[in-house]
Length: 242
Image 1 (cartoon, rainbow, N blue to C red):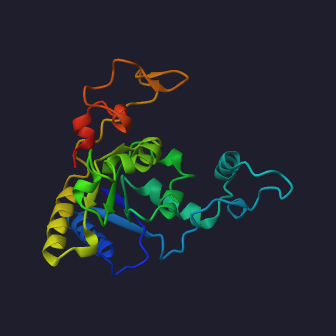
Image 2 (image 1 turned 90 degrees about the horizontal axis):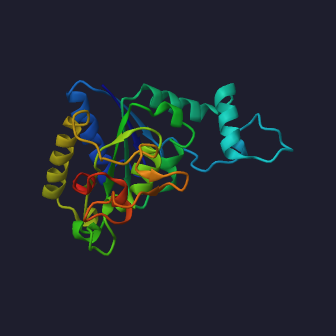
């Protein structure tokens, strides 16, 4: 199978860089093909502006959604976007890897590529300086999957992908060699189940669970422990498992 990893970290010798190497080596050892887009090394331009639409009339207001569609179907997207689209078309599985403080660069890869994401799988690989408990239901940082919801649901799932629970390594600022080894072993196991693991059971927009056109969840469908973003998963336990 074909795996596309979007990597967002400025330092290749970082812990994130080491985890990327673990993931690539494990996937390749299984016979998978792997492509990596290192957004910092590529100097990826994360913001959208007129430079992305060279054929757009200079005296006409830029409406990004419309301009993106026109550029896509007329073949006038910039070379950097087209190259990433080809990787996305090629892939069966997409991984976003980043420390929680890296935000803008990774989303730019997907923004203009929604039509290519159907029938693919995706997951997030994230590192955090805080403790695991900090990102629990009662933790000060809030549940990790809630923090990642704009990516897992708002980007991956919205564009048609099946989304696996995220992989996280915590307390990375003070990680020992043994803690890295444990995380690397866990990541290897996750890489072995990319195409067999059960995805998060997000509700489908037009699957009958939401009031139309308000897109609010119909009353009575929520589970006994569901609140916040977990309302949008059919099975809260599946949605929070990691």
